[in-house]
Structure formats: structure tokens, C-alpha cells
Length: 443
Image 1 (cartoon, rainbow, N blue to C red):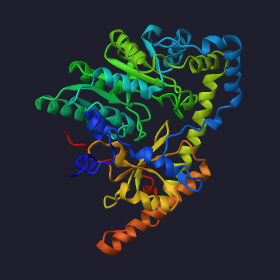
Image 2: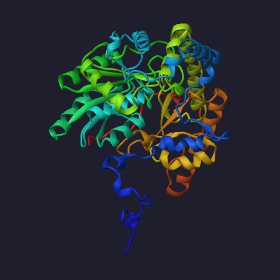
Image 3: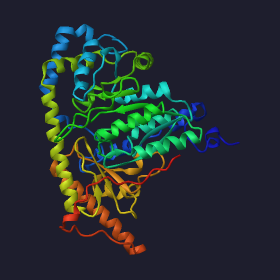
Image 4: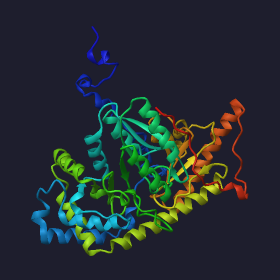
């Protein structure tokens, strides 16, 4: 007689038959699987989107913690409100005002990072078989969350100006014609992860109107919006619409991710549900970390610190583009005006996921493009993160990556007769910094 684990498809987990159906979608993302390898000191990691927290003076945080514990320690160590402390919610309004948002603190819900807010919104809205529309490519963990609620992700293509409105209209029409239920549009309009592009102001207006006319909620995820380089991104979509947009923000990129504090700004009716869902999940976000951040915002030059981060990331972006132009001029890539990421398009005969083990062997890591699609697209793409490595290490990493890519092309040329990559010519057309990626099919 076969054991139950064999009957379950050779799954060695003895609790296999007890899991809910939605647990089948809980799988380690390609990004998460990279962390163990990329954390080795000899590997130059261009994979993870980790903020460069060393640019944050430690004394600013130490002083805030010290004041909180000395003056409000008993409160800081106690349970708090499921919505978040009132003072921090008021201060969050000041942060969002920098992107044109006018709101009421009563409609802000503090969460354990913005990813937790994304989880709560998904919990409120998604039923099995529902559809979430998003850019193609899109944030990998968002897709993991959507799939955990047994929803499908429909990718709408982008270009250098972000999500393409005409394509959005086509996708909505096709999905509706197929009898599918669209719950919301998930978008990262400013300094997109992974593509690095920014949705133009004209398209923000157009996409919002498309969603209004089709009664589709907009879920605006904006972790990078304040990390612009030369000029600010257009105002947030939420600045245009109060009732049809849920806005997600975080302190992970503008302060430090270790605090695990983010927020959702939602229409009032949705806000009430979010508070209940937040209380059911965590009872309350950490009083201590909220009060430390509140103290920091009250006493430190937080706008100046964000400006410091901008300078750090701008320098590193320039280092990455310079290295790409020198070592891989025949490829195409985006030229972000803020944020953390460059999206690279490889020659069509290459597969970024299949190439990754060779890259790690050459001591460089990246994130393959397939991680950012729910339908298998992205084979020809990779995401390179410039936020954490030093400019010198970025240069080393791109040089190693060029060695890997040329090695793969040479191997293909030997066995299949395909063309090899050129040898870094110095020519005006070599710098080809534009968005490129495979079109997404309607599913």
C-alpha cells in the first residue's frame, strides 16, 4: 500500500492534504530564492532592492528611540490602535502632501509595511477566479499575494511612458467579454518596480478616467515616489481622485525598512474594513516603531534626509548606466529618473532565468524577468538594482555580467550558429536606454 505522501504526488509534507486550496499558491519567489546566494560577500548583487540605510545617520534614530522610551516608554510598549497612532497619521498627511495628496487623517490606516496593506486590500476584495489588472512586468510579491487569494493577474504592456491606456481599454473589454470579474488595477506609477519607468501625467489622467468609466478601483502602490533624481514625478493618482483610489505608502524607502511601517489611504468605507482586517491580522501595528518614526518626523530634517537618499541613488544609477554603456552597449535598458531599478532587454536568443546559475558562478546576481510576470513572459529581460552596491561594485558587477552574456552568446553561436554580441563599440547609437519588453497576452 502506498503512503499518503506518495499518493499526494511524492510531496514529503505530511500535512499536504490539510492545506487550504489557496496555500498551493504560496511559493518562494525567484527574488526570495536569490537572497541566500546574493548575500555571499564575494557576489556582487544587482538583484535585491534593499535601501542603502548606511546613508541614514544612526544618531537620528538613536535619539528618537531614546526620547520615546524616556518620555513615553509605557505607552510605546503597550498595545495600540488598529488604525495607528493619531499623531503619525497626521504626519503621514504631510508626507503625502509632497505628491499633491490632500486627505483626512481619519482615512489613513497604519500597517506593518505597505506590503501588509497590499495583503489587506487583497483580502478584502479578491475571490477565487477574480482578475487583477497590472502592468507587465509588475512587482513580484504583489503577484504572490494576488495568487494566494486565487486571483489571476492580467498584464497590460508598458512603454517608456508607463502603462499604455489603449492597451488597458482592450484588456478590460476582452476580460469583460469573457465574463471575467475585474476587481482592481494594481499600478506602480512612479519609478516602477521593476521597469524603472514613470507614468506620465497625461496618462495618469487618462487611466483614471478609464477606471472610473469601468467602475474599477485603482490600487496605487507608491514606495519610490519621493526618490526622484532631477525633478519630481507627476503628482500621485490619488491627488486626482478621492473615492476610486486606494493609495499605499511606506517608510521603508525614505527611512528604513527595518521599522516595518507603511500605510493605506482609502475611501472612508474601505478604510473601515481595512481597520477591521488589520486588527484581525496583527491586532495593532507596533506602537514603539510608530512612535519612533513620529518622533523622527517631529525632530529630524526628514526632507533633507530624503534628499540625501536621492543623491546616493542618483550617483549609483549613473554608475550603472555608464557601465552598461561601456560593457553591454548592444543591449537596451531603461533610464529611470528615480527609484532603484533598471530593466534590461537581452538578445532574443537568451533566457535570463536559464543564464542565472552561470552568472552566480561568475559572482554576480540579478533578478530574471520571468519573476515579474505571472504568465511566463520576461525571459528576455532582467532587473538590475543599483540601490545597494557602491558605484565601484556596480561597475564590477556589470563587467562580470557582460562576461556571462558574451559567454552564453558564444556558446549559442558555436552550437546553433546564432549571432554573437558585439564588442562594446564606441558609437553614438550604443546608448539605447528605452523601455523594451515582450507584449503581454490577455488571459
